[in-house]
Amino acid sequence: MNFGLIIVGDEILSGKRQDKHLPKVIDLLAARGLSLAWARYVGDDPDRIAADLRDAFEGAARDGDIVFSCGGIGATPDDHTRQSAGRALGRPLVLHPEARDLIHQRMREVAAEQGQPFEPDRDDNVHRLNMGVFPEGAEIIPNPYNRIAGFSVKAGDGGVWFVPGFPVMAWPMIEWVLDERLKHLHRTDAQREQSVIVFGAMEATLTPLMEEIEARFAGIKVFSLPSVDHPEWGRHIELGVKGTGDGVAAAYRHLLDGLHDHGAKLGPELVR
Image (cartoon, rainbow, N blue to C red; front, top):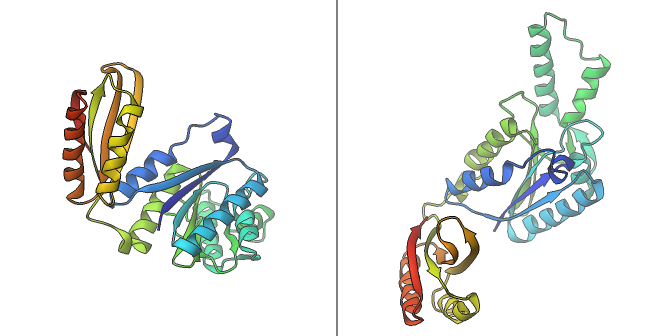
């Protein structure tokens, strides 16, 4: 089972807005001992959104993947996520009764704040109900900011969870999903990393050592992050291991021994 993230919107790909969802979702997952396996950015293209969602639903059904999709669930012409989800699933879109009631409640509150009567049959209010039209069989995700719900669709042991693109709405909704619907997936054995700065070495020279560690220590991954212009360390490689449990420390000791055998010049050690 993997966690995935889809971020929808031309404004991200054009550079008009900087994405904030990726680092936030990484933090939200890490706080619960979880990690993100993949992320995709897609513009406001219905066919591409449907294709990415089809992949997400297939992964959910096959492997139990959990995927969050941020953006495009509004009711303006450039919002295509709800419709694309229906296409990916081969399901019709229907007005969710609970989402409808929450939209009506929100409209009543806004009308009261403005000293106006609540007119559910007014054209703009009828149009707002489109924000509660989801693929058949969807469940809602409550929105504490303005009551306009997101939605989720299960597939096998996994599913895809759809939230708005606005961080002020999306992030509390994702937290709610993690704590109210996915709490059973929280882990106390969070992934750890240990690494060391290596000066004057080539990745190709160190690759056999990296391969040996991954083969010897089950569940441990070795990572190599080269840098050519670090402001403090200059040209170097951050070489380390990551995983869970006691294997991280053992693999790291083996890594240091191997580096010493290579005569590598070592700098600071890092723990995350």
